[in-house]
Length: 445
Image (cartoon, rainbow, N blue to C red; front, side):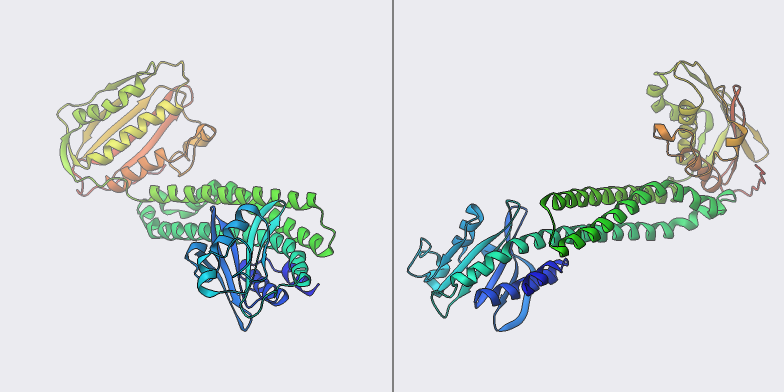
C-alpha cells in the first residue's frame, strides 16, 4: 500500500522514475535494475539504480543497444511479446543463454517484465541479482505484478504532463524571444508624429492576439481543473476506465488547443515586429516619376486584367525625383491593391488615377479612385495599424499603415486622405523633390 501511494501521488516524470526505481529494486529483491521506456519506436533507458546506492540516474535516454549491462535479447523479446521473462539461473536455463551479456557477466537471476496500460506497452522493467539463483521468488513476483499496472498508468500520466510542460516552455521561450525583438524595433514607430502615440499601437496588437491568448488560457484552465478532479478520483480508488479515457481525451484536446493558439499569437507578434521595421533598404537615386510609376504597374497588370478597371497616369513626363524608388514602389502597389480590395464590388468598372505637380521644392502626388468611398467614422483610422474592414476575408490592416510609415519616415513627406461615400477616395502625398532637402509640412488630419 505504501508503494502504491508513492507511485500514485507523483506526476513529475523524473521524481516518479526515481521513486519507482527504488520501489521496484527493493520489493523485487534485485541488485540493480533498469526502467526502459519506448520513445519514437525506440527503447531508451530512462532510469537505472542499485540496491546499495541511493542515487538513481533518470532521463538519460540511452538506447538499449548502447547499454552493456543488460541482456538486450531478453528486453527485445519482452518488447515484442509483452510477456514476462523470469530466469532463476540465467546461465544454464531458458533460450537466452547465448546472449552476449549473459555469457560475459554470468548473471544468476534475471526478471524482465512489461508495464502495460489498457493493452499498450508503457515501459519495461529489467532486474538482475548476480549473487544468488531464484532471487525473484513467487511472492516478490506477485508484488511486482501488482505494482506494474499502477506504475504503467503513473508513467503515462507523468509523460503526458512532461511533454505538455516542455511544449509550453518552448512556446513561452519563443514568445519571449519575439517580444524581445519587438521591443528592440518599437522605437522606429515613434519617428512619425501620428504613430508616436504608442497607446493606439498597443491596443491594435492587444486586439489581435486577445483571441488566441484567451482561447489558450481557457484551454489551460480547463485542463488544470480536470487534472485536479481526476487526481481526486484516482486517490479515492474508485476510478473507472471510462473516467480515465475521458480525462486523457480532454488532456489531449486541451494541450493541442493551447499549443496551436500560442503559435497563432507568436505569429501575430512576429508579423507586427516586421511591420515596425523600415520596409525599404534601396539606395537613393534620381528617376522620372511618370516612367517609374508605369514600371511599377507592370507587375500589377495580371491582377488588373481580372477586373474591369483601368489605370490612368497623368502629370508632367519630365518631372524628376531624387529619392528612394523602392519605397515609392511599395507605396504605389499598396494604394492600388487597397482600391481593388476595398473600393469596388466584383462587377464594378472603375478608374484609378495617378497625377502630380511641382510646388516649389516639393512634389504633390495625388492618387484617386471612383469607388465606394470611406465613411467619416473610418476615415480617421485608415492609417492605424491592424485597422481593416475586411478581416473576415483575410485583411490584416497593415497596407495603409505601411504606406503611412514609408511616406513620413523614409521619404520625409506627408500623406492625407479625402473621401466621400459613393463618390470615391483620394490620397494626397507631398514629398521633397530631393530626399534630404529641408522640408517641413504640418498636417492636421
